[in-house]
Structure formats: structure tokens, C-alpha cells
Image (cartoon, rainbow, N blue to C red; front, side, top):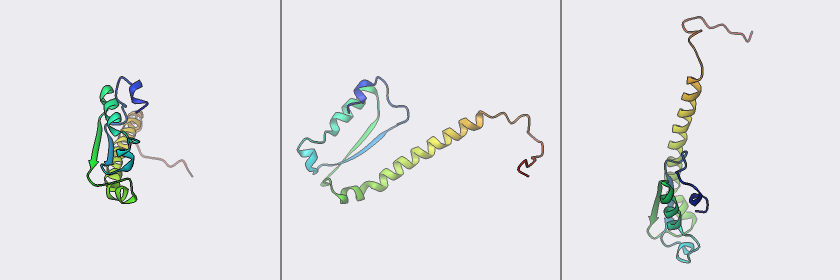
Length: 109
């Protein structure tokens, strides 16, 4: 929430930010957690945020255990996509034309 107001554009590496928040969380009801402020700050710079308010959940281990699989999947998909982008950019940087169709010689021996 503190860093997003300094931005005028979304963070390019993050197509979405996923937040799960229990609506029965004491930190939420006591105004120690303010996810709506993060959503508002993100909106000002165009950053997508998915805030999922989870009915009846508090700030417990059970809450985390209930939604961790979603978060691992969420981040895993983005890491795979980013890895593919990096590999594609590195492959594009090499010119294979000079060796195309020629036998490969092992130089390790």
C-alpha cells in the first residue's frame, strides 16, 4: 500500500496480485489490516488486484491451509510463464545459422 501510490503504471511483472482475507479476522475488524486500501492504491496506478473475502475465516492456520493450494497454483502459473519468456528471449539471442545442418562435435574430450 505504501509503494503503489508512488507508481503511475502497474508493476509489469505482476499481471495480478492475489489476496485472500477472512472476513472474521480480528486484525481486519480491529482495522489493523486494511486490504481495501491496497485495492484502492492499486487501482490508481492500474495494478490488477484480486481480493477474495472469505466468509467466516479468521487469521488462523486453518485459513492458510484452506487457500494455500490456490496461491501455489496462482504463482506457479506465473513462474512457468515467466520462465518460458526468459528461455524464449535467450534462444532468440543466439544465431544458429552458421551451425545449422552441420554435425555436432564434442569438444569435451
